[in-house]
Image (cartoon, rainbow, N blue to C red; front, side, top):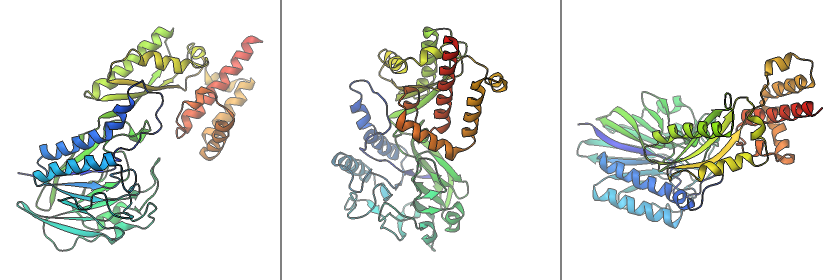
Length: 414
């Protein structure tokens, strides 16, 4: 019968959610408890899967000492694991560096790997030995390639490497303990349990090099959307047989795009938004969904969307009528007026020159960032304010459509 262990990372227990729009009254408590409930679900998973040990690959907390609520919940969970003889191996990452005493220190059945230099811990289990190798961050900013310091050694059985690190640059994530897949493979581990990147990612198949992703999504950013959880790893001897994701998040961030093309009026728009939302909620398996919608395409409804506070009011109107499993977090728009851009580009109108300027910006991300930074300081139109700052293409499209709409409006008035 295969043996199992669980790999989780980036739990950020009891930390605030970030970048969230307006939430309905009374929902703050649900959000506050989501990461802690996901931790409880992780403990349940360890028990149900009859895991032999749990690996935590950094950023258990959002700061070095965590919070009283977070530490208390962790102690209770680990006590449950100890009742079943399930060991815990943990490293500290850039958010919770091991600058002093670990909040996990002294807990029975928990091994916290020391900072800066990888060490190893071998378990003599009934099914055979397992060796776990790991290293904690001693400070937030770690620029050293820690992967190069790992070595398998001669111990028999499965060898698991635990590291909080950056494999190349990732949008939305700082670069810490940078290394390559080749560096990890050279250490001859049978499984690499990585932390730091919040989206699940399989970086290498043999041996498996896996980012478990965050246990609970933390914001509406693309890397935080969709299912989150942990990884169940099945093994025999020194071979990993398979690994599979388990969804343990309590609140799920999702995003949908809804085109205004073919929509005649406000009632059509609301029906289209509700239909898109229903599909997302159906896939969330009873979890609360925080939904961000972006309106796209072209059509006469554009004139309605650009009215002052319209999108804010639309979000509120939809949210007031929803059940507890769906929260409309924000509605934004990159939709445009009912014009043919290709025809406009071929015309001699001033609008063609404007479109050309936008096309040039789209091809130069550095200059685009500079222009959008300037707009953010001097221009507060909600068409841009509601869009995430990291979505350069979306912000450019919204600015372009706003400019075209204003020009067309002036042409009509003339």
